[in-house]
Length: 333
Ligand code: EPU
Image (cartoon, rainbow, N blue to C red; front, side):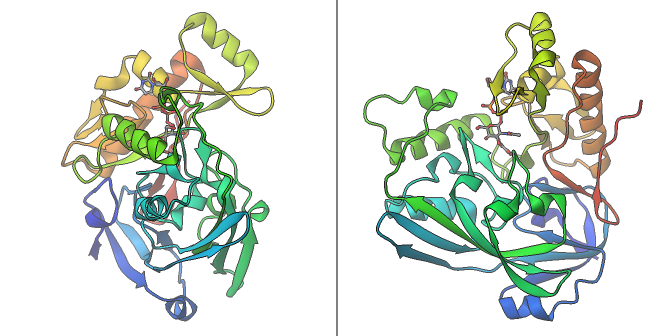
């Protein structure tokens, strides 16, 4: 069995039956993809909560290629590139657009899977297309942005886990850059807002609120912000007039789950060595010796109390892998 603690940022002491590192496209074509298998990037959004009785496939393809066109840059990055290093490298070359997404842990190949987003920007806005190995059909495919079916922290890859192995992503970054500063900490930026100022501010805010996984193991937001109908929001606001929410398309709003967790007094909740991050309650942390059961029980306790108080069923944003593959957390009635 292979230790997985160093392979995922929540650092649970779990193992897998085997592990394969992919360093070239040829490696991919040779692989049998015998089930169960799990596709992994840097493990910043996956928790191995139990010993996985299958193969973990780690995508480590590297390389970045920048093509300058009249109005845009077309940047192709291999899936195994580190996301923040990629964003930092583009910033150094004055290629703007991804600065709001600075310091998000993980790899380039994982970015489209969960459609990473922060401070008013989702990565899907900039994805032109991507290349993937279709594991079912055993062939290479080019997928346009539309065929990726992006939504809030969602994509066709998240809907059909294990179907495609993303090998590279093409980003279209317009030279006519428009800053996105409507999200609360960025509204404080004054004067002429540059991409560098946004990049620096995002890093400052993330470092204040979100624990560094190298110091305190975690996987970022553990839950998604729930999207609810406006009618439900009105009821919630009667109870909690200060509740934070964001408008989304249609007659719906996205409720700040971190606010709910904090205001229900759940910041001090713990199970074993799993706890709620004190600076940002949407993040769960491993205090050092947490085991998978600690984390799943803590998550279920939070889900239960939020459901009882608000009627909202929180959904994990992270992916939980058990003995045979992905597992869901289900609240008992
Ligand atoms: N809030 C609280 N208490 C908390 C946490 C949040 O009151 O403990 C309030 C904040 O004060 C703020 C609101 O809730 O008014 C939203 O909080 P925040 O701006 O920190 O962002 P979030 O909605 O909790 C989302 C993303 C993060 C991303 C931030 C910033 C999801 C699931 N999470 O969190 O992404 O960094 O916005 O844009 O959408 C991740 O996906 O792993 C992640 C960290």
